[in-house]
Image (cartoon, rainbow, N blue to C red; front, side, top):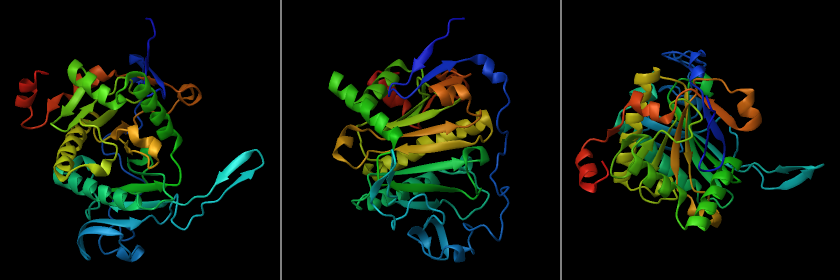
Amino acid sequence: MTTKLRQDPMGRFAVVYEPGLARLPLLSGPGNGSADGGEQSVACPFCPGNERYCQFSIDQFGEKKDWKLRVIPNRLPFFSVEGGEEAFPDGIYDINGGAGAHEVIIESPEHGLTPFAFTQAQWCDIFTMTARRLTDLRQDSRFQYVSFFRNFGVQAGAALSHPHSQILALPLVPPEVQQKLRAFHRHQEHKGRCLACDIVHHETSARKRILAENESFVAMAPYASRHPFEMHVYPRRHQGFFESMSPEEQVLFSRIIADLMQKLQRVLAEPPFHMILFNRPVPAEGSRFHWHMEILPRVFAATALQEGTGIYMNPVTPEEVVKVAGSRPAQGFDDQIDDNGIG
């Protein structure tokens, strides 16, 4: 067999699809939990009645003692608003100050609820609150990048099973985002178009890797998928900031995410995963960015090849993912596909 490498369109890595890897054991099976075992505990800092662990709410939906979603400061923050802005050398190395913010969204008062059981309305609450927090944090001139991420399962780095996600504000544009940003700039300079808009146009025309879609969003198995059943979601119209979504778009985005979670549950039985928002950086050079969400199931351990070369081995092609997980337009979207002539 001749090996073929698929190149990530943003220039970050290459992928070799090797079906033989499917014989390797998965990192986890159904019901993958977190470090606390998934059982409700009087010591769980996120459970109702344990607000004493963090009495201060940055924001919340619902009443003080009858909340349905709550945002609190992270007790062990990666970055804090009290951090300095200074930068200084350490021999040949550089050290930068750690001014930033690190918040936790407690997504539900129900301890044992998993993201695979969230309703579309619950996802909408999460993303509505996320947009509120990103908008607020962006006002601090010290922060260059604000984003959202979620870990599910021990293998994905979740220390607690109580459903939660996190908001991070950074004093710099992180290297991964810088690399994506350079790809957007190159594409704009060479072709005069947005790279993400071109990806959306190509994928909705080819219709080989579409997992779900509606009038505002497209979910796809990316052409160069690092992980089995990796999924990306893009807004159809060019949007730099996640928080620029309208309330109607937040609802449509939530429907897409809920649908993808159901697909993952059906095919991989609640796998550990990362959910990462790639948002437009604050500096002006980020103006060509197009926000998107990536969902990365973590079912295989990282290999030396991956760490040492940036080449990923994946047993499942994105085309096979669509065959197994199914490609389904959002409710009420079938007629629009036919009318637009892209079905």
